[in-house]
Length: 69
Image (cartoon, rainbow, N blue to C red; front, side):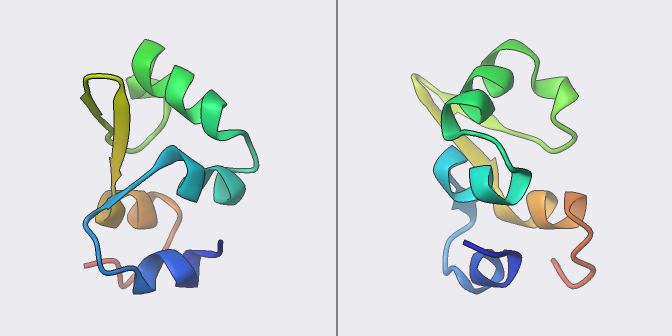
């Protein structure tokens, strides 16, 4: 999945699986990092029980997408 693919998604939250390829890491790694050191990611995350959700617009801004409004 590319940044353009993420921009086109009609949802406000992304999953670790969706952002893992962009970050060049595993989805499991994103989940672990989000739970243990969310401040180290550089973008906000929401932990809901065992689920990790990533707000789309802040993630895209973090990745340098200028029109992520």
